[in-house]
Length: 579
Image (cartoon, rainbow, N blue to C red; front, side, top):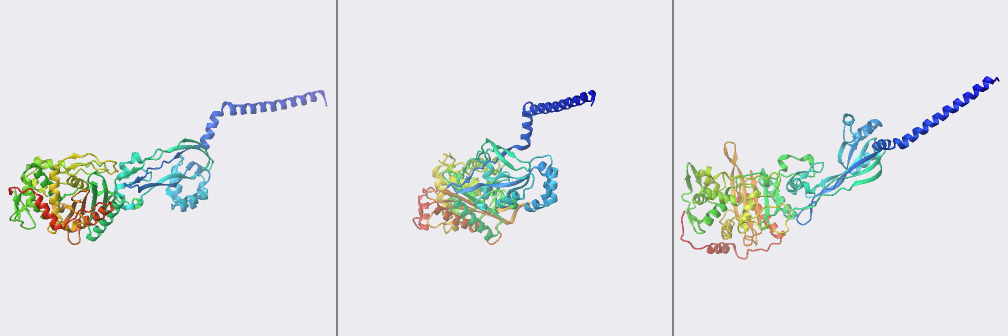
């Protein structure tokens, strides 16, 4: 080998060594660059692909009845979701058919839904699945498909309390009833945590907790579950028996203004969202207005007693059974002749109520109705509550003033009417309505003298006598004060001849009032349609059970005839004024 060849080989060796050293230096520099200079950036990129922040659902507060029994609770459930990027990038479509079968979806529809949302990282496939289905989805191991823990609202009393409690949507937000009214207090605050996920979208490890979820506030309603069930059962039976279109009933604690029971027909099951119909889930006792008919007569009498235009012993000539007011004729069922104020309520005389109303000015009658809460919200804050309407007194003609005396031309809700009867029961104090249990009764506002309220109550006891229109509202062992009502329902072009509302409003026990109750049955189609025949028996059944469930002592310690005679003798003997 020549000297030139030796030098060439040596040069080649040094060149190769230099290339290797340069490559090693580049690799070393690249390692340093990646490990130190670009460390934060690369770690962030890695975390973005594997480290995720997961939202933790908060438990919605429990809704309970006044005795602590649950009316609405939240139970943990899983929902199935997909990360379209992982699903499409890891051949998730290969398992589309079995996944679609589990979720009861069409495979093509599933593929289309994922493809249309390819740019997202989270898409729900099915919400609130059963534990069994959740396990099957997990075992299928579809890339990008995972489970999300949520809460589903459950209502133990179902349709019995549906109208009061209401319901939530699938995202656990209040939609109706007290779920909506108390939504901010019931709703919890969501938490969060960081988790490590693999390329299939599965959680590999919990990294850290960001914030613990805070459960919502538990709420205690004024409703008594026992009374609610009793009222619901009897109302539903009455609707079926009378083939009525709809009905509502309300029971109030007269001292506190608490709603102890409120039921409606038709009803709905809040546990079954698929069966929801807007016509069924509105709370008719709060949202629907109607003309109260003769149940308004006690307030006409009370207004006149307060003004002194009548006394308990004043007599009114109702002969010959009809009365012309302007161009209208007002009629009684029969010619009652000359009767006293008690008899006007007992026999439900329209003529008697008309003459009493016309003994006052329109303004005086309007103020009396306004003071008792008619035409005003009850203050319950129940979603959708109607105000009702009594109209402007300066627009009333004489016949309009007269018609309001016996409950036409005025609109009320069942809750408003029950609240007004609670005024009579509570010696003239008007209490705000509460759907929440109260630790102490509110003071209330005096809108009627205690003496007048007591006088009207005694008169209303005669309505429940054998001679009164409300005799079927009797409750064994208890004195009842109340009033029937039968109203022609308005239709197109005026009042329909074959459509009625049957009403009864009552107080128990009459001697020491504790409960006020209103029953409204709309369009009874089978048999009698009068309030005394349709609504009064329903009142008796529910009130009888309610008085015993609440352990309220009986107060009927003497025969009925003796009691009514005693009530008449208590009235001050006046000069026998005649209207």
